[in-house]
Each structure stands twice: as C-alpha cells, then as structure tokens.
Image 1 (cartoon, protein in one colour):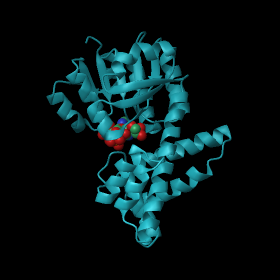
Image 2 (cartoon, helix red, strand yellow):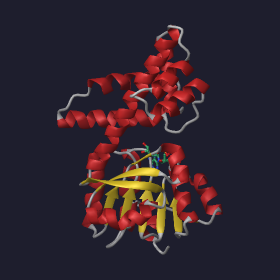
Image 3 (cartoon, rainbow, N blue to C red):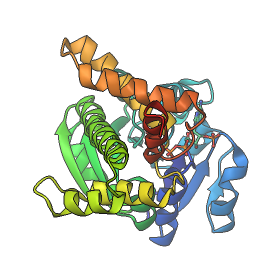
Image 4 (cartoon, rainbow, N blue to C red):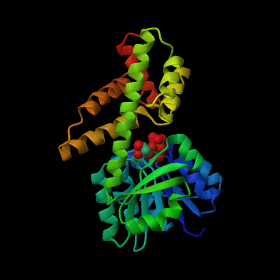
Length: 292
Ligand code: NA7
C-alpha cells in the first residue's frame, strides 16, 4: 500500500478505525486534539503530526472522525487546519456525522484549491469500527467515491454512494432518526411492560421472534437487560444528531414532531448525568419518568 494516510480524530470510533490502516500496511500519520490519545497508535508504528496542516502535508488522503461541525471548523478551517496543507490532488474523507451545510462548505473549500473531499459518515458503532465492518454512505463526486474505495474498505465492509455532497450527511441523520425511534419505542415498551409484570427477557423473546424483529433490539435490549451502559455511541452525540436533523427538517419544511419529542427524552437523560453513557442508558430517563 503506497497511499499515505493521515488520520484525524482518535476518539472512540477513530482510534479503532485508524488501526486498520497500520494492520493493512498503509503508511499512517495521526493527529488528535488531545495528543495523549495518539500515543497507542504511535507506539504501534504511526507517525505523529504536530497540526492538521502538517497532517495534510504528510498525506495523500486524510481521513477524519471528529464529533461535530465545531470540530470540523477547527480541524479544517483553522489557520493550521487541513485546508492550509491541501494542494492539487489532495483528498479528504470525512466520516464524522455533521450537517449537510458544513459538509458542502468543506467540499467547496477543498475544490477551490484543486483538491477534493468526499463525505462518508459511518454506521456500525464501536464494534464495527473495531472489526473493520462499518457501513459507509458517501456524498460527492462519484469518481471520487470509486477512487477512495480502497481507502474506505480498509475500515469498512460496504460503501453506498448516496449522491452529491450533503446527501450522505442527510442520509446519516435519517439513519440516526430511525435508531432514535427504535430505541425510544423499545425503552417505553420495556418500562411499561415491567410495570405490568412482564420480564425483559420475555418481551425481547417475543420481539425477536416477531415480524418486527431487528438485530438492533437484541443489541440494545440485551444491554438494558444486563444494565450494561458502557459507551458504544454516547447520548451526547445522538442528541447532537437529533438536533442537526431537526435543523435540516426545519430548513426543508418537513416537520418531525416525533423526533422533537424523542430528543426531549434524551435531553432529560443528559440533564440526569447520563450524556457520556451509551444511548441504551436513555432507558434510565424513561424509568425515572415512570417512577420505576
Ligand atoms: P468521541 O469518542 O467523543 O471522539 C470525538 C473526537 O473528536 C475526539 O478525537 C475529539 O478530540 C475530537 N474533537 C471533538 N471536538 C473537537 C474540536 N473542537 N477540535 C478538534 N477535535 C475535536 O466520538 P466518537 O468517536 O464516538 O464519534 C465520532 C464521530 O463519529 C461523531 O461525529 C459521531 O456522531 C460519529 P479529543 O480527543 O476530545 O481531543
């Protein structure tokens, strides 16, 4: 592998995604806002960049996985940001979940200097990142999707081209809207069911044997049954996505009253101190509301 990869954002997802590049033999340079989090990858053979600008200068393709639009603002547009290190032929692949608007701003800025950017938000959470089985959805030029496929398949198992820049960002927000409804529906059902004397195990058994079964209910329902709220995807980040979706729906003139109500439940969970726990911990806010 000769493509020089730069990786920015070594959080829960990024640290696991970046490791695959080393394992597959790509030359890898890394940058993280909190430098200590890069230590493990550096010990495993990655080079360290002093700034995003230096990261871009040392790489053919920079992949990033950071929290939100504010993180992209810092990573890309700061004086020592990726853009300052970009030049003709440089490629930027961002896997963060951000607003379609920010994604378009990023792509336009890179194209203006003869480089290009592909948005590629991912789903599959911590375990998918660890196993290299993430699903990517991409937005930008189709040719760029094809060109970057070998890079994407280093940490993912499938990449679906969604359309122009902004459409994959929108698709990702729709996906997390579906997750929000599934989770809220299941939590409300499990809490009211327990008040009626049903066991979680019985409820999950019926759900999983039904026509509305989903592996997601097993994954999150199982965690709730075990009271295992170790973070795979935090409540803080899901609320970020719900907020981005509601802003986009307002812009498009498509009301989402269900999502607005569900976000309030997640906001309550944050207010109760569960923001950094896994999204399954939203059940605790539902239980509190029920006096359970
Ligand atoms: P984490 O584990 O919270 O990691 C977030 C990463 O983003 C981490 O590397 C942070 O650096 C970085 N970050 C956050 N804010 C900034 C700013 N302002 N500037 C630079 N870097 C920043 O999240 P996940 O890995 O679970 O999720 C990442 C994305 O995938 C997110 O969009 C999800 O919705 C999907 P730090 O280490 O705190 O210095």
